[in-house]
Length: 154
Length: 100
Image (cartoon, rainbow over all chains, first blue to last red; front, side, top):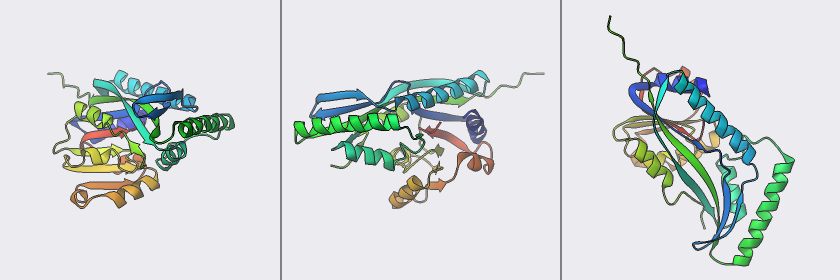
């Protein structure tokens, strides 16, 4: 990760900037809605993996700032929701965009996920028409500028 | 119902709050199927959008509009390989899109 950031600094013009978007440490949520009413909320079962990835990203950014390659200009957080009409649709969509590509096979997590999906499915069926499920992931977005050191006058 | 990603445009609003893309040369790393690329590409002078996973790049290339074809270049390549083959000081903006 740090090497990638070094390379990005090389590819950027001196007055350019890097925008990094990565998930925050808190667990993504699965929510079921009926209109504006929230019927169900629970944390995503494979949060440990997400948390580890987020921590690595934070560490890499901190390292390049500490080494003087970049200066953090500004950051903020936002919620990225993905809505679907069923939990299967949502799962298939996330699989299609590669959400599980890097996940190591973990039977315990898979069992938790299956149980969660079954509960969400039950709640949605009970809620009837108009219910929808959403996967909410919170992300941090950071603007970093290359640290262009001024030459000291001789 | 079709799956909807960020219909409130939270990500786009956060992106535009931090950077101006008008007339800029942009490198997007981890572009996937171009979900984020489509949000800013019409403003940029040129976009190089790369991803190490082939499926997303294929979908992005299928979905590119005629207006953006001259300006947006999707490539299936790992960042390390892309960086090795690239000249320094090329881009005004780099976006690490959920890929660090």
